Length: 604
Image (cartoon, rainbow, N blue to C red; front, side, top):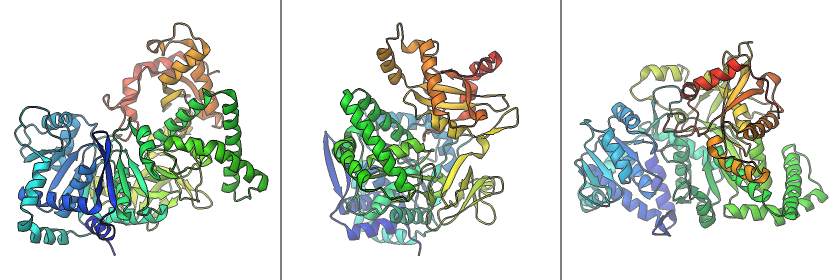
């Protein structure tokens, strides 16, 4: 039987009414909200929506950071049968306007004044937006036209609740599993964003499968820091909510390290880049430690690595190795885990490929990083590694209820209850994405291994075809490069060229440390693109990281960039995927000079 998100919330409130469901920081202290308290707030806000005349099927957009009001608004929208449209908080006013013109929301919710200013610019002249609700109070001055306080609407709904109870009950009862719960706009790496219509059944099926896969219970806790506007964090949120677990909202992405120590979560959901940076931070700290401590860490990692290798190969560990591992756990691994709160035992990585090297690093430390795979259009999980059943370099096996097959051209196709209803107002794009048999065409290339684990090799449209006819998948190469502590970002180039090259954004902090260690004279960040020692260090890293790749996949030359790929320059999506066309356009001159020069292959 299919359920709606309303059913999911009602069930958890009935089972765990007095359990703390949400914690957030205010005035420097963590504040708790019980499930029954959140239920009361949701019902009051839903009544407020009725006061504003919100009808079933109306769209309500929201742009804010992760906070209790985000999920309160989301659940209240579902309760009245409306459709939630999350908006990335990093989007510019023109990008926001494009989304709003497509879905035409009657109501918009924003948090602070900076978001409000951007939203007011985006909605200028758009008469279909009746009101903007602001979560935070204005610091000074009066609210602009069409703007009201979110809290005041909650109070208005609370005061009028008795008159709306019957309508609220009938409205919630009218919401069917196949009704659209949310329209989530795709990141748009190759063109105009499209609104994926995800139904209540889409979310509910993914929540059930993911919860059973991971084993989440009401005793668990998590730290929420990926944007809730992304379907990955959104579904992870629902998984924890459905179990009656406690969700802590990070103060900001910059505060995550401190919040991990305060919250001490069991679980986090994150993109691979966060794990890569965490690994680099740990290794940097070890590198600066006294000799004996460094030697102890290196010994422990060797022992842990052998244990992980044997476990994954199904081999016995043996008493001597088991004893060594126990010592390594007590002296090293437990101490390292204290840096992330001490209780973190598993995490889900999604949104981009996770390096096997990074995954193994955390496995050795006793933290299962479960790489998964999915898209906005699939709610999102298609496949995932399981606790105790991890195969590094793969995204695991398909989750329960989801079928996966590989097309003749290598494209991954998926079918199941998690597949979107279609793209909002775009039947042609829907027909291109979902074939008559219900298979969703992911656009990703992959293959199953002999044991049924799925491996992703690249995006179908991003395969580089060299002038010699060789096909090169850029993602594995880029993934190998960014594991280096010296490389922050990388994009492989080589379509219609005679060799592979790369655009490399170095880690400026790491280069500063290297400059001090090696005594580089006259080094400064503004010389990073021309300083010979920088190029030599990066060349050595590139050679080292790509040593296991085929000869034609080797990066023969590279351009050092002096800034990161950014949202402001429209070079990455809000979920940090590379917008290759834009990056190529912005660096066209440097790339042409590189190939025109015909420089010799990279040498360390």
